[in-house]
Length: 116
Length: 111
Image (cartoon, rainbow over all chains, first blue to last red; front, side):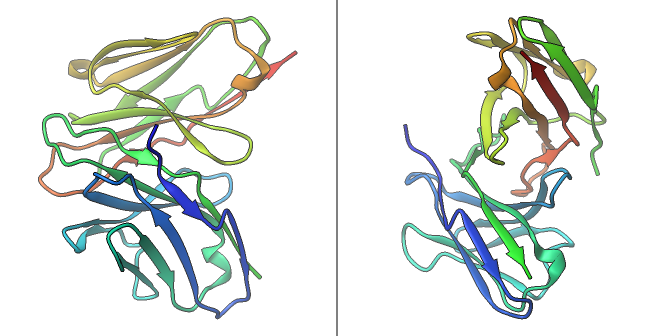
């Protein structure tokens, strides 16, 4: 069964460093997403991406964050200068387009980011 | 934005027991999914269920969209069912706004 793949599964970095989280969405999907979950809290929407541009972004997704689809398969989340409060589990998700109803969103296994 | 309320917040059961988890949402939705977050933090898709009833083994789910709630049933619980169960919904809006998650139900199944 096709799946969304995320690497690395764990990332430890120093405060102020740049990190890139990588995702390979399901191959025929066209919508891509990043979500974040701080330990013990609910999963929060960060950003969605379609047709090589950001479709929607939340208040959390400030200028320190960026997303890119550098080739036909990868989807990346970059945090330019990490802060302690960026420590969280980051999930990538993808799905096929569809409206009524919206089609199922498939999630990767997550990258646990620890900022020291 | 849309409110997603899950109940109960915590549930402790003995192995073999049945349980019902509830998800209420404050607005009409175009998508509803149930997830199980395992102890390793992975989100496992359980059901994609914007309306109707589905069953998968010991798990089943029902969404009554007109009354704005969904139920997840777990029968004959096993210790591997432990974890956090999230309900997530999506508004019918025109943008790619993604899912809004509830706070989850933390389920502990004791042997």
